[in-house]
Amino acid sequence: MQFHLDRAELNLVADVLLEVSRTSHADDTLMEKILAKDLRLDGNELERLGELLGNRKRELKDEIARMQNTPECAGLQQKLAVLERAKEKVNEACVMF
Image (tube, rainbow, N blue to C red):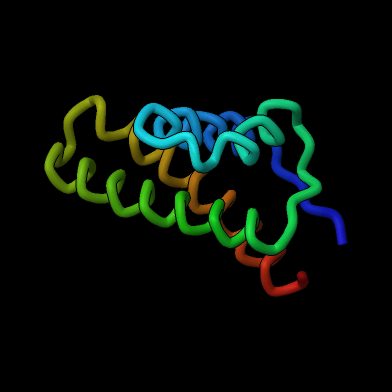
């Protein structure tokens, strides 16, 4: 099975991992793979990535709810759509693993 993310999804995943790496270096190997566009992830890495994307999804939804129709809200909603696509692909890869 091949795991593939488009450019927008890959960039968003890298951003999420970079944010996490500021506080913890536990996911550095995962971040290195994503930055190298090496998506040959094992089951644990896929699960961890799904967890991180799920956390970021909740944070984005909270931000959108607080902003309520401000100009920045549209950009966050676009980001959320990309994140949801990436998370769905990660979830599918986890099931197939």
